[in-house]
Image: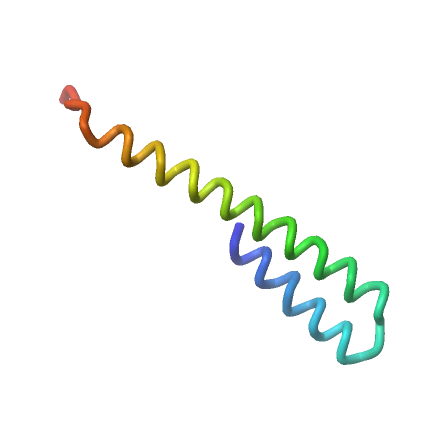
Length: 59
């Protein structure tokens, strides 16, 4: 997920350097959305990991 956000960010920077303002802002918006989704999923997984640490697992 984070790699997609970085790819869209790079695409936005290239489009901005070439003068395509509308396309650059669209790519930047998608990159920002993917980054926030990544952060939310990361925080949820971290909380689930920390809460699950105290339980004993059956093997």
